[in-house]
Amino acid sequence: MTLSNQRPLRILQVVGGMNRGGIETWLINVLRHIDRDRFQIDFLVHTTQPCAYDNEIRALGSRIIPCLHSNQPWLYARNFKQILRDYGPYDVVHAQLYLFSGLVLYLAHQEKVCTRIAHMHPLTDLHEKRFLRAIYQKIMTRLLSKYATHIIAPSKSSLKAFQAICNCSGKHNEILYNGIELSQFDREVDKRAVRQKFNLPVDQPIVIYVARFTAHKNHAQILRIADRMSKNGVNVYFVMVGSHGELLNTLKEKVAERNDMAMMVGVEDISELLKTADLFFLPSLEEGFGVVAIEAAAAGLPVVATDLPTIREACSPSHHPFMFPPNNDELACKNILSILENQELRKQLSADARKWANNFSIFSSIKQLAHLYENCTQ
Image (tube, rainbow, N blue to C red; front, side, top):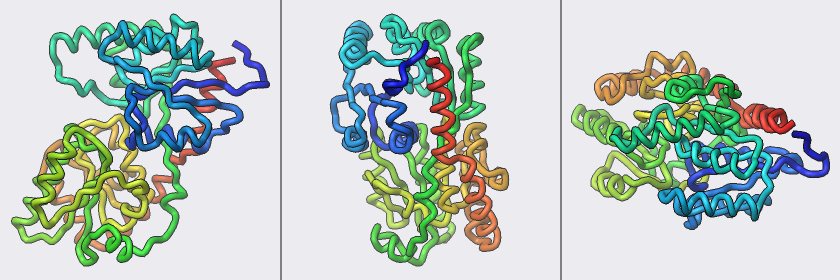
């Protein structure tokens, strides 16, 4: 397909909603920095509720287009096709919805969109393994196998995991690491002033975690780790930062009862919070890549994380010895304390982390994405 030089490529990103999260933050950074004279990006979402990035998306000249009834395929199909007719034509439909992307790309094929990209973020299906879910997975992977023209993933491990459940042969398969805006983490901050601003202790080591408040992010382990340290008389303060999730209110109640922990919701810029902490703890039980580990590294934080293959890809090799099996509280505690109690080790890991983060610039990510878009529409 040859496009006129008189207009930009038109891309429809399909995502649940543009609240703060790994995928969504990567997408807004792409929109901020991509050449918008060459690429016009709109966002199809599954909600009419305002989301954190909506206003900025509109200010940057893109549209937020609600497509409702994702739990009723026949209504969703009608709405989706009508959106493509009303707002299109689109050169690319880029779906960020894991298995549901199968239906999205089937509908895009019916509306004659030539380039249909499935961006497979999770390592595994997060839904409970039940009979109907197995049928759903089978249907959606068949649709993806037939109607996706490109399969991309944010890590080698997540791509390999998806290839194990879906026949991706004959398609363009590519790894596209989530890039971050490194300049946010270059500035110096007054740690004491930042801690006072957020009502955090100025004289205690701070261990921080940034994630949605949802089950697989495993905030429960932070609570257990804090209990263990408190019983042993270890003076460490924990901070959990996020924007949304089904466990938000439950965690709020639990944290409110403690004096060794804080919970922050809706922080617009996490860079200064990261830069005022001493260590990043990542207890997640499922990640497609673990871009928060890259953000923590850019802030110069040592990272102690669950030893998942996807998170291992996101962490500097010097940090691998400090990873731990899922939910291994004893080893997680030991690794956290071994870093906090050794200033020279902490400095070395901090330097390694900053150097490692330079491999994941948003500009490298955008360059690869732009090349993909332009090549697949020629």
